[in-house]
Image 1 (cartoon, one colour):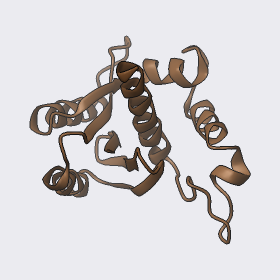
Image 2 (image 1 turned 180 degrees about the vertical axis):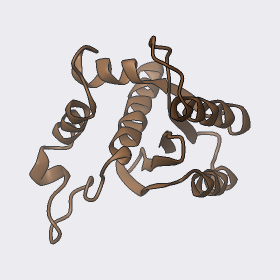
Image 3 (image 1 turned 120 degrees about the horizontal axis):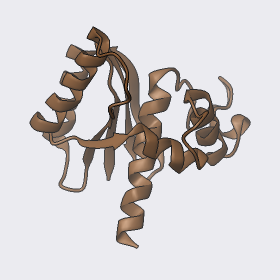
Image 4 (image 1 turned 60 degrees about the vertical axis):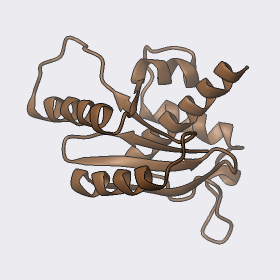
Length: 159
């Protein structure tokens, strides 16, 4: 099974293609949203009924609705409608990895992912001994968090 996970942005988005069976990243990147749609279309043409497209979705938080936030909301809606992307909310990710919402940011979620994969040496590694998370950076961390969260939720549903 594969999970194509997206951390959407107004112009650029991070993504990770996660192989659930092998527990490895098969593709990743931060690309402009035109390229992202191409990646999703390619994934959709080869995906099976057991594969999923998931993306971080936005909850209202008493913040001004500026251009960037509006464009990101449009991205999420577009992928939900056109590709049946499953939404994953940031608050759920924070609770899943860190047990709380308050005071949790990207840094803490990244740390939780690194710990899950055996610590920095094993998870990331170095150029000569690359770990599973080698060269994951920026928005790709959030996309990976979405993928692993979704995988864990599927396991809970299956029992």
